[in-house]
Image 1 (cartoon, rainbow, N blue to C red):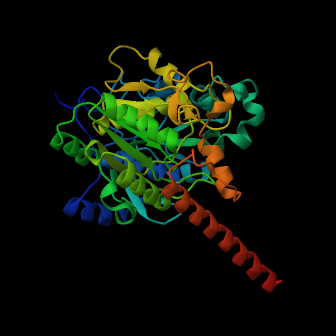
Image 2 (image 1 turned 90 degrees about the horizontal axis):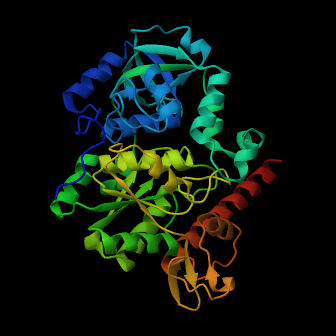
Image 3 (image 1 turned 90 degrees about the vertical axis):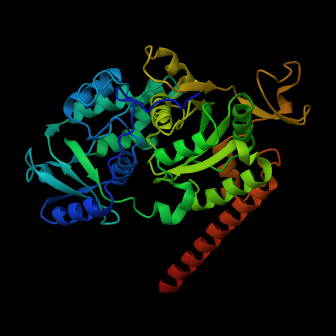
Length: 423
């Protein structure tokens, strides 16, 4: 059997990254273009567009696609009727917009690294005022969790995705891009940084057609490991696909996590049924709708399934625990070839001496038999220097993370001492 098709009506990848002579010529042309500085989120989107992971998009959304995306999760211009759940937009302030006009060609520079990321043909410039931003935030990010009832009371301090929307510029630039840079991801992550074409070729070489992607921005604990191995039991293999774009405060850096991933795969996984990769996107923390976005670009990578467990792509209590599973049931026929692999709450059982889920755990046992493994709790215990229960993760991983957090403590002490000396 063949791999699933890339997303969209054309059923073929649409990578936008220039290479070779075309790239050099575009860099030269960019010197004559107006400069627009962009955020790390927008840079991450360019990287995904460049490698073809955001197929069928050809750049940043025009107004019709933006409105279709937030209102009914459908593109209206680039590939009309195609599923797309969260906007891919480029915002600027009124001051920047005043120097631009439709038809301009602009050079897009990362505002943190000063790196030329892409060039863009400005087909549309349209305004999204405060009311429009609130509409986008509610339609894209409001969930069914406890915090949803008091959404606007807590959202500006607790939801990174909504903060990004509300603090962005009031004008959006729409049009096709030509991607120039991939930053330093290839140098940092080596062969793990792969484009969809490369991942698809690996799956094909292994004779796989049914592959589950596992989304992660954390070290893999025992619950994650359990979910991945369920996928390996019922499908050809698992694609552990780690986010290494910009993270929120308190998250563990990608370089440290890569050491954890490799140690775990080397010692506890069947390598013949495991592929490890990374991707450069910045999280939106969009819960169910981000769960669909994760499915779309994993289909572009060749995956037939996406593992969706508890609180996928969530933050705080904004979403119901299995809302990211439920939203897949609302999609229209043919919206997405990839299917969700819906897995239940998993945990360690002392009585069973192993991992299980609510579907396999004997209900007559007391709740004290269960050790619920949470990534948030895991990070909190480690950061506070506490003893992490052995049931949370493999000993090799705990040792790597212990050393990481001890290193952070040493840096804090050194920094504090330096300031005291200055004082």
